Amino acid sequence: MRRSDARRNHERVVRAAVEVFSELGLSATVPDVAARAGVGKATVYRNFPSRDELLTAVVERQLRWFDTIATTALHDPDPAAGFEMLIMSWFDRIVANRLVQDVMRMRTLASAEIQIDRITTLVDQVVVRAQRAGAVRLDVTPADLRTMMSGCAQRLVETGQQDIDSRLRFTRLILDAFRPPATPAAPAAPAAPAA
Image (cartoon, rainbow, N blue to C red; front, side, top):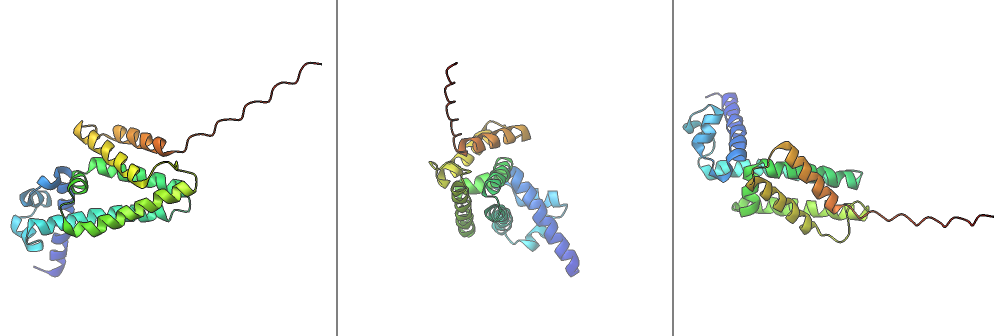
């Protein structure tokens, strides 16, 4: 097989694997991936000798996406906009992607641990930066945010509410929960007595 054909097949297998694992989570199989890619199982195994190696490649690609979003949010000139973009992008991906749910919950792949730890650190920095800018309430922690996002995402998945409207609604609820309370308006000055 020509090198260019091998590269195309490799990329086709990886793209198909990302789609299949996103839909089925850790229950996806090599035959599922081969069927989606339109290749034989032998082609998949030529590129990835074991299912675990294929899964690792898919997880690493997914985690690179999360890393990129967190890094972009951290370097946004507007800390509030960066925080909001992170929440909107992440929550949508967590709810819609079975593999992400499985990996975040089970943390089964040792090779993903370092990436997950780095991403967690980036998210914590985004939250603290937004707090310092007054965009996020000070009485919450980055861990609170992770708990709320993962808890809401898990509930939406369990109840089958993964449509775009549900994802947007809960994204707004999460953002509202982390906004600082509005400062009460100063009381109006009493009216001057009539002359």
